[in-house]
Length: 261
Image 1 (cartoon, rainbow, N blue to C red):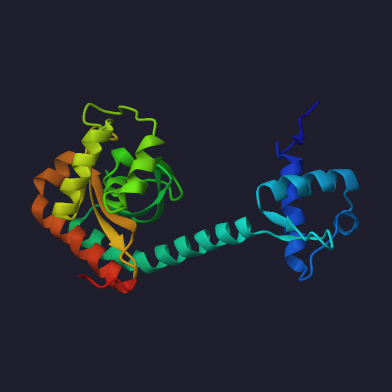
Image 2 (cartoon, rainbow, N blue to C red):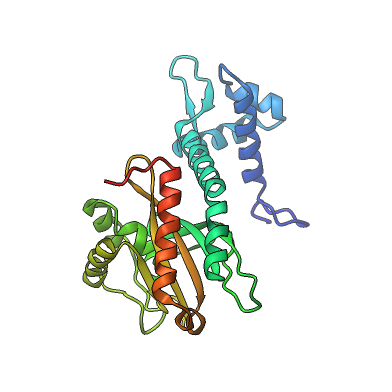
C-alpha cells in the first residue's frame, strides 16, 4: 500500500489529478460535466466525481444547479487575486528595498500579514559577509517580528483581537512578547512613534526595525523592515536607521496611492 505516493518522486497522485481537473475547467467557458472531464483526462468517472466533490467543498470549483456542470469557483479567483496582488506589491517595493539597503547597509524586507503570521514577499540582501537572510515565502509568527507588529498595530481593534485570540504564543527568547495585554500596549506605542522594533524577540543577537506601508484606502497592507546583527545596528546611528525605514515606507505608501491625513 503506497497511500497514493509514487515510488520514484514520492508525489501524491490525487493532488496531481485535482490540479489537472482545475486546468481542464479553466479551458472551458461553459463548464464541464463529470463524464466530459473523466473522458478528457482519461480518469475513472468515480474518482473524478470524488475529486470534484472535494474541490467543490473547498470552493475551488462550483457546480451549476441546472446543468450540473462544473466551473472554476470563487476561492480560486480569490487565491489568484491574492497572489497577483502580492507579486505586484513585491515588484513595486523592490526599488525601495534596494534604496533602503543602500542607506543602512543591512538586509531589507517586505512582509504581509497572513492570519497570525507574516509572509516575506520581497527582500534586498546586505552585501556584508555576515547578514540576515529569510527565504521568500517563509512565514513566521507576527508577534516576534517588527514587521508583523508594525502591520497589526494599524489594524482595526476587531482584527487585532481576532488575531491575538487565535495565536499560540511561544517564548522564543527572553525578550519575546507573549502576552496579549503586553502586545496591545506595544501597539499603542507603535502607532504613536510610527515604527516597530523586534528587539531580539525572535532570535538572540538579531534586531529588526519596521514601519507600516499603507495603500490608497489608508489600510496597512505590508511593512518595510531592516534586519541585522544587533551589535552592528547599535554601532550605527540607530535613530537615523529608524528615520530611513519610516521614510522609505512612506514613499512606498505614496506609490500605492496613500495620501497622508
